[in-house]
Image (cartoon, rainbow, N blue to C red):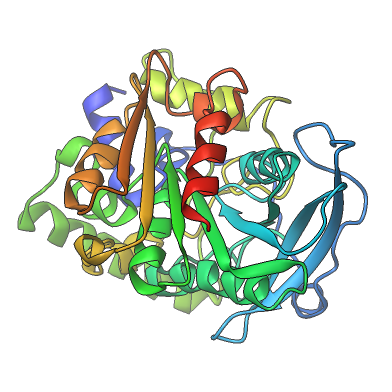
Length: 358
């Protein structure tokens, strides 16, 4: 399969992995309806990173405006006193809170912030049916719901709340910041613009009405088939094996999601992926359309060698004000910013949040 074909096929899969190579993982993480209603939360430590002895960890839940209960891990500094600044973290797109989001949250808690890493609606341990659905509206709301929880927490200063979005959740974080002024500072790390990649394909290779209409027809046919079958077709996560000529960023995803480094049994990208029709809402509802109106601080972080770098740079161009920053990490790839502690600029993020959450 040629690289150009891989890029084209990526439009139909948003995250663009399983369908790109024509295979899906056989495992399924589909939970029963009863489990989704009761939210059976795992109590043992099941993260892809070691537990810190500097923070207290607990499971929490909160309900969004659509009535969906979200599950989260809360991390509180052990030596904390008084009202704390707080940060909500989500991402990458197709991951769960036990992966990169949890690593970010725990690390920032070690630096004095009360943090939550949450599973978005329809994903991981969070509620919502059918499973593995995406929505630019509901997923933006998920961030604001985390802010609801933090703003009403006795340990948190409600005037000092920020968010971190990783990968596709970076674009959603900026979208949330545009809608919710309670978010005083936002970090978008190694971000994707999911509406752009859905509508235009990678590197805008399919940015035409003809290409989008062809995609719409494919997606419409699939939703008809899903309705007939009574359940949605999985879109496919990162496959167990990649073709030799797969692009380097596909290999990087595989090295994270399909190895002990980042694999998790509830992760969509590690297993069967989202529903095959996931691109439908993002094609027609562009994210960050009001980004130029954001008054609060934003830090966009990207790797120099990340295939997704153009998403962050173009999003940054929309922002206005001297409290907006773009940080390019020399030599870093997209997935280096998932879990590489020598690359992720936690010192910079700590400084950024302490400056702007006051």
